[in-house]
Length: 238
Ligand SMILES: [Zn+2]
Ligand SMILES: [Zn+2]
Image 1 (tube, rainbow, N blue to C red):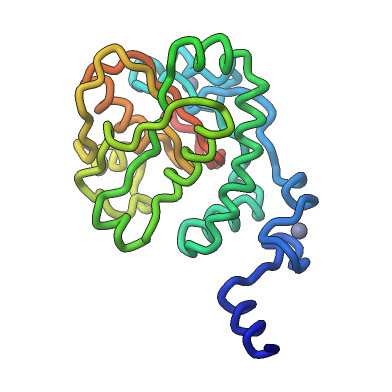
Image 2: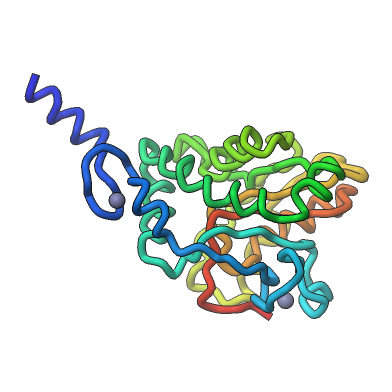
């Protein structure tokens, strides 16, 4: 039995990612200590904005209408959490637990009842290419979106938006190169007059989410917001 438990511990390590206390992947204390982004700001240049809408300056060259983001990626524990959940499928339970920070922030926003529910916004996870999803075995954005759909009572759609080209790693590229790199990598079904909320684990430069937005708007979508677990605040993008 002891050996069995050891094997079990090895494969399903149930210790907190933050403080290594045994019992859960993320204990309540560490969950409450994750660095939250209390303010609402433009998703591209980080200027404080009403409810998180894209500021008038960024609107000129961006398609996304706004974003609600819960956590600060500069917090080492947030970083560890997002990286772990992306590559180790059994740690995806971490995503479900930390999604709580995001559902709470959305519920606190006046937009939730008066806009997202009223205008029938539909949650759409940022897709992976079919090949990438098969390799990884899951799409972390979809796990978050399913949890949000349940908690926030919003519909979920995993068919309208597809990723058709794998753009490859982007971290070494500058903003202009990133935008070029990801161009035309999504496909969207006809979406006339629909409102969507794109869901992802992390927004880095905003290029991916903006390209997905552009694709959906070309397919007829009207308003598009984004919900993300975390934002990398290192380089504001203008
Ligand atoms: Zn802990
Ligand atoms: Zn801005």
